[in-house]
Amino acid sequence: MSRPPRALLPLLVAVGAVAGLVAVPGASPAAAAVAVCSDLSTPVQHRVKPATGTGLLTTSSTEADRAVSAYGFTGDRGTAFRASATARSGLAGLHRLYAARTGDFLYSTDASEVRQAVSDGYADQGVRFHVATSAASCLTPVERWTKGGRHQMVTAPASTKALTAAGWRRERVAFYARPATTATTPVSGQPGLVTKPIATTKGTTFSFAAVPDTQQEVVGAGDTRMTNRSSWVLQQKQMSFVLQTGDLVNWDTPDHAQWARAKRGLAPLEKAKLPYTFAVGNHDTMATGVGGSARDATRSHTLLRDTDTLNSYFDAADFRGVGGAFEAGKVDNVYTLYSAGGLKWMVLTLEFCPRAAVVAWAKKVVASHPTYNVIISTHYYLTKAGKIGTTNSGYGDTSPDYVWKNLVRQYPNIKLVFSGHVGKARKARVDTGLKGNKVYSFLTTMHDRDTNPTRLVTIDTKARTLKTNVYAPKDKKSWAEYTQTIKGLTFVR
Image (tube, rainbow, N blue to C red; front, side, top):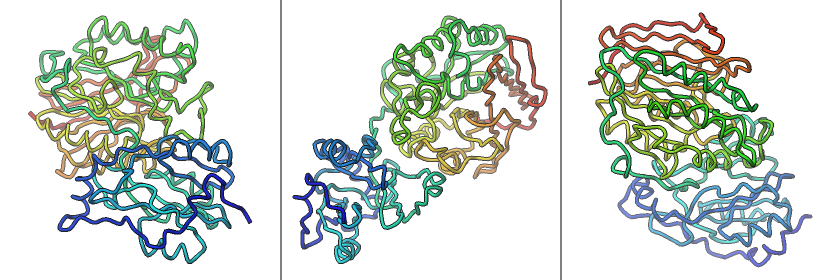
């Protein structure tokens, strides 16, 4: 029979009465959750025992360190989410229970479930911290999964494919907490950000470039493909802006050589003051290590949000036209404002399978700009089969389907979505929003090792047409199968 870690023995005392389940009289669960979001500020560390999958959640750094170094919880997943260290109105106390027989930790806010677990042999360690039991836009769900009598807590939506393949079964959403990263910035009014669209072209016709994954273009020193593309883009008529759909680099190294090459490759655009943005791909974060594989597969979810190196090379001033950002000092989630073709345009750039809080922020941004035609750029949206993805692809928080249901289909001014990550480039997918409006989504992935594919998009707002083709300026190569003309577009004014 396994025994509990010595460091945890003082905690294995049943508290007798189950306490901490707090309700707010007269308030709906959702309203109560929103009211207490600011109280959820304490980081909760997540440590996992790889041999069993059992996880330890704790607000104590000392306990977390001892669990890793002395008791086999070597899977350090960093800060899983944020909770409240003390009782607050509208929050429920989360009990941590330990089963010495299996070495399992069970977490619950339900009084009857806690009592049943104790009768089944679990020792109630008491309320470890406080969480919400109802969903809200500022919260992320935490799911409980089970396998062979053990339990695992996962910030949801979980990587269902990987967990299911490993034999785990989803029980339910156990509670809601604040995402690990909570800092947000105002939608407008920040110093240095624009409040009006910057004019890029005149007339009713304009073009923009949608650049695919460029990760192969910065691996070797002396590769000029990215610079060549930037120079070619500047030669095109009525060019308004450039967007890139993620995996700007392949992996980071101690000398950050690939980021330096990417910066040089985009320098012509900056020098000419042509606006551009790029979405954050998994290869642009610390989730991907040298060689292109996972840096630490047990921490990919946490490392995906580590973009410190990226943000040390690029900022809003490089992009131009930035109207706001989700996080201060970061370009992971930003929106840019332009006028082109006689209309106002917004390019909304979202992180990989964005956090629920990011989607909530994006909704506010789009809703507060009803006269802007919105283009969304994100790394993962369409699958290689051209369908809207339904999982987080093993990395992010939500899924493309979540983004579609909670953002894209909700607003008639969202017109286009561009993504990469998987498969190859495709012609447009057409979906219908809740207001009967058409949304055109393009997969731009190429992963070319030899040349520099670029999707050129030309919109005529008077004729209501969109024309697109894929062309590589390095060797003047075209892909006829991606050439397309769409008629009957509608715009907001």
